[in-house]
Amino acid sequence: MASIQGLAAHAAGAELLPYHYDPGALGAHEVEIAITHCGICHSDLHLIANDWGISQYPFIPGHEVVGAIAAVGSEVRQLEIGQRVGLGWQSNSCGVCEWCMRGMENLCPQSEATCVHRNGGYADRVRANARFVMPIPDALQSEHTAPLLCGGITVYNPLRAHGVNPASRVGVVGIGGLGHLAIQFARVFGAEVTAFSSSAGKEEEVRALGAHHFVNTRETKAMKEAAGTQDFILTTINADQDWGTYIQALRPTGTLCFLGVPPSPVSAQAFPLIAGQRSITGSPIGSPHQLREMLDVAARHGVKATTEPFPMAKANEAIEKVKKNKVRYRAVLAN
Image: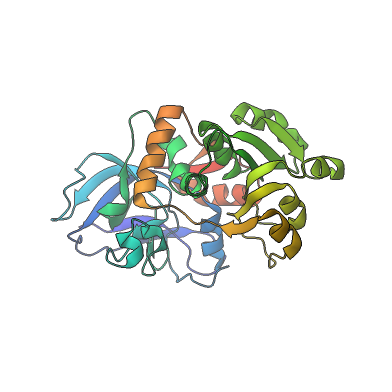
């Protein structure tokens, strides 16, 4: 096999430089994907900077991959050469633990991430276990689908796990890469959707995405009026907030679910949780089964990421734009 060409970080926070590596023999259960598109996720920025202390250099970031199957391992039956596929955050799991056996491979203790301790999708090709590589429905365009493979499943998983349905009132905090997808999926499930944002200028956009209501979080009065209105609130932001205000916004039995990671520990008064039987939870990506289901739902209901394309060679430029929150709503690299 020829070496794989990509763009790698060689030190924490360094700009990406051309890098190639020998992937070795293709594993029996692996596939190799010729990459056409790769989304830029905020997780990539954290990995490049080693914010989580798990990065090993040099490494090629990228885990929102769309491309075509270029090679299949000897034991792979479900995918064929030339097929258009997607690969997200997870590229392997043990397959035999309690969580894998329950179809919750995303919770496997031996879970392998696409670009942690291995090379990801800012490249011409990438490899992964075939179980984590999903066929892309024909109705979906590659550029608008790449961000669904991490951003999309990150919002879809909790909406499904918490039984969001036409009776639900769902709040989405932060209207960015995750938030704009959360609004669309919550609307597809029939929920009444409220967008919570500090950017008053986004109101028109979020209504176009499907939100029924808009709350400007900088207005104390608007936040007070939101008290007791939501069954389920997804917070997608990476900033500290007065979380008590969002707990107050929940109806009895409501849940505040964290997708974004605020820098400080989350603290809450116990009484509103006890009195209203409210809860606080978090959610990661979903399982391969859910990824497949999400892509089908997106294809049937027209859910897509709002994207800004960049050539793969301009990845550094795209990353800088993402860092400055200048992209609406997801940057996608194209080969």
